[in-house]
Image (cartoon, rainbow, N blue to C red):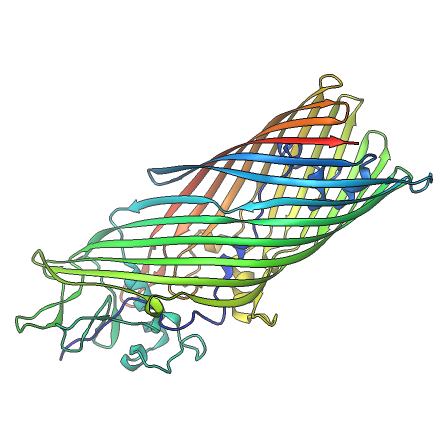
Length: 545
């Protein structure tokens, strides 16, 4: 009986009810250490300090500390370096990190000396990153993962995998990988070749244990930003208690290109049976090269609220706290996928095929996300007139993220995944400032952000990690550290600050999740450790009047 070969994961219909899943929402919820140069050079440890334009997006009570109006702009130059395996990529980017104004209104009152308002722009996240690498001697193929996890375990039949005009896998409960178009090959008796093969009562991928060998290459390029526009109001009660309210409007733009390719020796492919047709599976002296290329553009607009307090019980001690509501985003995705396949036997090319989804046109979809709520607390000590020591703690409730349709209704399956995959992140910041004389100040700081995922994700105890559509790739950060320093100059109403920030970011890239094969024990996935060593120089120019 002739075996049927099914194709490579090319969706011909709009992607999913939701175009994102848990790890994508996590990506969109991240923030950076950015803002004014003074803020950056002290690692952002300003929850209990205030008096800086960046505090409007961290602890809005900081606006109440102002006695004079403030106008400033911060420019930055990023030198990004990412290493995956033995491959390092470098790039340089220019950013405007902060622009802001605080207006101080002095009142003739001892109980309320001043009420202030402010407007700031902050770049809260830069997504710019590019890394690539290779994995030699892979122990499985993405095609096997798809065949096992999205076909065999869901008991699909041959009919389920055929394309029909009214078949919509995203709304009739079938796995997205089942909505496949095939490579049309006129030399086939049934006209198709692909990477998922019907073999007896089950489907198999290209890789066969003990027979097949090969290597994989991957590339990830990310671009974009999340910008926040803040409108804040705050004041001062008896020079003891400072309060602030902030309304934030966020603009998000994210673009990614993800490439995954495999080159396999002695894979199972449809080969020549000497009757001029490609109709029989074989792994004898065969070779396969195939690739999957996903493109995504995400745009979003969101809103959030922040409330904060700073209490000064003595001249030398300040205590601060702030609460950030989740950011509620309306999102829109535009996406496209391409695939290629080359099959060889005895050194001869049997077939060469390429295809893109939706006949070469982009798809798009709308949805909503809710980022984690955050709480930050801080202590600061003022040492005479020459020194400041400040420490912050921030709690980020990653497991409270949500995703829903464009009417705001949550997707329960994505919500369950977020609860299962993610745990709270803890951020500790430490900063100090020394005023060498009335004009010059020296600053330094350190911060660390803990990992975001449950141990079962990081240790690969969880199988079948949920991703979306035709992209089984997922990635996350383990730890992020910042080592900072800077210098400040103040003369009359003018000030200039410079900062240097060194970021060490450790991430994990997974081409697909590990899985359990029906015939074999646990099968590892294709993954890599990614390390970023990024450097930033920033300059703030401003006036207080």
